[in-house]
Image (tube, rainbow, N blue to C red; front, top):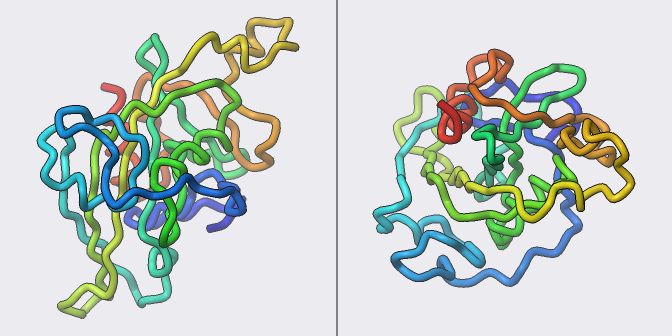
Length: 220
């Protein structure tokens, strides 16, 4: 994943804010650690475990590539997070050079806990306190090379929903200006800013329909 140049591949979405790959994930359970009637998760080892849960939309998608050398070939999928505030806005990461906007997200390596990865994705985007509330949607994506009849890889896209936690002012005790608190970005990210949006912006990556679809899950 490139830290500074977003991809425009609508199925790959290799353009999320960078995550700290050296961080240690929480131990992964065999399936979702939650009551069957409660979509809240403590961990998520395998998105397929959510397939039969009525409250979690589960869809099948296909992605067609020019060849097998693409960024999804060595990962289990991507964790996407929609953080909303009390005003009904959603937090988007905005690339400083390319000016494209999208939900915080990143790749999930084999053996990683999906929920821990989702948290890191948000933490690289904002310093504001937040809580992941559950799973909004799951996509099972079969990857094909153009002209081939069988997929060469299958990945998942898991969209988590999250909300602000506690008093946002606590995220920056040194903030004297309310405008500092209203700015959800973090100084630790060299390539991505963050802002609140109440609609799908026009500057999502060109051709990336799934990126806009993910944002649309959280705003009208």
